[in-house]
Each structure stands twice: as structure tokens, then as C-alpha cells.
Length: 290
Image (cartoon, rainbow, N blue to C red; front, side, top):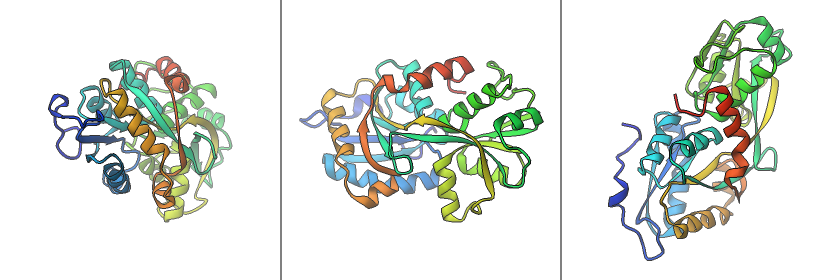
């Protein structure tokens, strides 16, 4: 099963007079463990149900590709994706529409940072050092924008010869692994299972704040700005419904809910905002979900 919970088919979902599905199905990528992600987004489910006056169901896929598959199949109406998973969904089903993204609490913009990290005691001071050393590297989910695509971009820019056909070949790196999530990547680098890893920087900061990762135990040796995670609508969702969902997000003012969503506020986005992601994903062999 792709999603946590049961998902009905698109045709069976009736709409309100305003064109909103009477049962709004919301999918979320598991950028942390699925169980934690589901709990984190429960307040948003409640907010959307109250705001839109419809039954709202929340689904968290087992992996990033699962959300793409559900979105393409019309099994969810709106979904929280990374930029890469949006590009993958758009590649498979033309008409997937980006609606909004969060204004990041750390940067104050719709962008956030992907980072390459090492243990604090590591001799590596740059991504170039990581590549030259030819050691082990941990990505997150293969379809993660900041845990897979952008770290790979940084490695290639530093001289790695990453194979477009085999994503686990990235010489001179000896071994490349995919941990499945940012929290798992942080742990892999912390415990020495990988000498370096790609991670979303704000998630690392959250893990440090929670005490999951000792503050200062991991050190950033490279970082790059990434366009924020888009909330998108499936192909075929009415324009009225898309507008209602967009307005619901941009109207969020409750500070506790915004904190849970790691946002200062939400702003509208378009497909053009993710062209850099799509182009680099195509070049590096990541445009099709693994």
C-alpha cells in the first residue's frame, strides 16, 4: 500500500457546490519518519477541515515516490511535495499545479538550504574535500530535493562523476547509500556509517533543538539555496477548489500552526519557480522516481 490509510478513487469523490471535494485527501512526503510526519500535520488537517467545511483525510506515504504515484493516480487531491517530487509528478501527469510554498522561518524567504555535513571532528572543510577523499556518502530519500538532488549537484560541481544511470555510483566516492530520510542521514553521519551526507539544513537544526543530534556534532561543509516545498493540486482538481486551498494556506495566521509547518507565512508559487529543479533533475537522472 502506498499510503498510510485507505485512499478512495478519484471518480468516487463528490464535490461541494463550490467545487471542493467533500472528502479532501491530503498527501505529505515523509521528509522525516512517516509516523512523526503524520503527527506533525494533524493540526493542519483539522485547520483545513474547519476552513473548507469538508471532511479532510491526511495520508503520509512510505516514501517520496509513493506520494508522486498517489498524486498521479488521482488518489490525493493536494499534496506537500519537495521541488523534485513536484517535477517528477509533473513529468508523469501534465496538469499537476503548484499552489503555495512556505516563507521559511530561518531565511525569511520562500527558499531554504540543502547542506552537506560531516562529523565535527572530520578533517574535511569543503565538498571538494569530501569528493577528493573518496569515502562514503549518505543521501536521504532518492527523490528528496535537499537530501538527494542538491547534494548531488554540489558533489558534481566539486568534481564527482556521478552516474546518471546508476545513482549509487558517484566516483571517486567509494560508497553511496540512500537512508530514506533526513533524520536517518544525520544519524548515519553521526555514528560514522557515512563520512558525509546530504541533509535539509533546517531539519538538522530541528534535530539539534530536539536533542536527537547533539548540537555542534555535525558541521556544514557546503550549502545551497533551494526553492521551498510546494503544496500542489492534482491534475483535474477544479480551479475553484485550487483557489480555496490556496486561500486557506495564505490565510493561516495562528502562530502555533505556522510553527508546526516551519513557516512564517505562505505565498503563491508557479511552475516557473521550479524550473531549476526540473532542469538539474533531468541532467542528473533524477526526473523519474526510483
